[in-house]
Image (cartoon, rainbow, N blue to C red; front, top):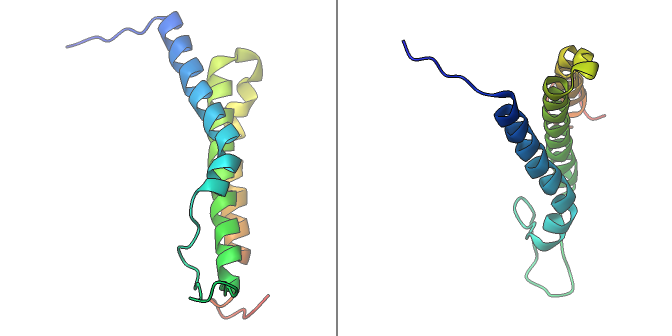
Length: 119
């Protein structure tokens, strides 16, 4: 049987590096959104003066971004609860972010689906 031991300092360094990468991603998101082309899912007219955007794309992108932020928040809560014993209660609270996101997407995911009609 192979036994793997991880020292406390190696674990702390690993968690610190993960948190640093997540922080860098969160801080860079607004800049990446400005630079990245966002023509997927949109109908661009060939005229240089007229741009036609599908109104459903805005709602879809908002749902996508909200789910991403909830995923990042859940990961940060989980990492903080593992790193700092004083906030161990966070270990039981981060799944509720997924439940809240699921309820939000259940109610407002797409306006044209489900028998509930348009909201």
